[in-house]
Image 1 (spheres, rainbow, N blue to C red):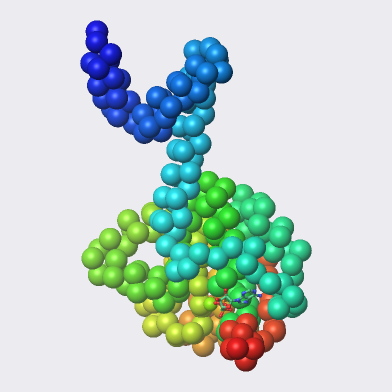
Image 2: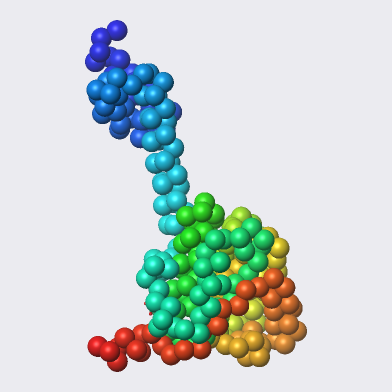
Length: 249
Ligand code: ADP
Ligand code: MG
C-alpha cells in the first residue's frame, strides 16, 4: 500500500471511530515519539490519553452549555469580604459536591444583589466540572416552561428530563408570584426531586413569606417539608454588591 493511500484509509477509520484528537495529533506525536525513541506502545498510550482528556473536556463543555447558565461565575471571583454574613466555610464545603451525592438541597436566602445567583452559579458550575448533569433556570422560567409543556401534553417527558439531572438550580423564588397552576407544577418538580435530584434555590424571601408567592399554605408547607428535610442554608444579610460598586464608581 502506498503511504498516501494508508493515510487516507487511516484518517477515514479514525473519523469512523470518532477519535478526533487521535486524528489531529497522530502525525505530530509520531514525530515527537520518534525523536524521543519512544516505543510503539508509548506512542499509542499517549494518543489514547490525549483523546480521553479531550473527550472529558468536550463533555464538560457540553454539560455547561446544557446547564444554561445566564452568566458564568466562579468562586474565585467572589469576594467574601464584601459579604461577611455568608458562611464561607459552608460554601467551600459545598464546592466539594458531597451534598449532591447525598441528594441534599441548598437554600440561598438574602436581599437583592448579595451574590445569591453568583454563588448558585459557582456551585452548579463546579458540579458540571465534576461530571454531573445540571440545569440552571429561574423559577419563573421553569414555571413558564412547565405550563407550556403541559399545554403540549409533554409534561411527563419534561419531568423525566428533570429527573435525569443531578442538580437543578431554581433562581429567584419570590420575585414573581406563581399562579395556582404554576405553583402546583412547581411543587411537582420539588416533590419529584426529593431524594433524587439536589436543588439549589435562591430567594429574597424568608420562609414565612413563601405562602404569598405560592398562594396556598398547604402547598407551601408540603414544599418546604421536602425541601428542608436535608438542606444547607446560606444566608446573606448584607447590602447589595451592585449598589456598593455603583457608589464606589
Ligand atoms: P443576587 O442574586 O443575590 O441578587 P447576584 O449574585 O446577581 O445577586 O450579584 C449581583 C452582581 O454582583 C453580580 O454581578 C455578582 O457577580 C456580583 N457580586 C455580588 N456579590 C459579590 C461578591 N461578594 N463578590 C464579587 N461579586 C459579587
Ligand atoms: Mg439573583
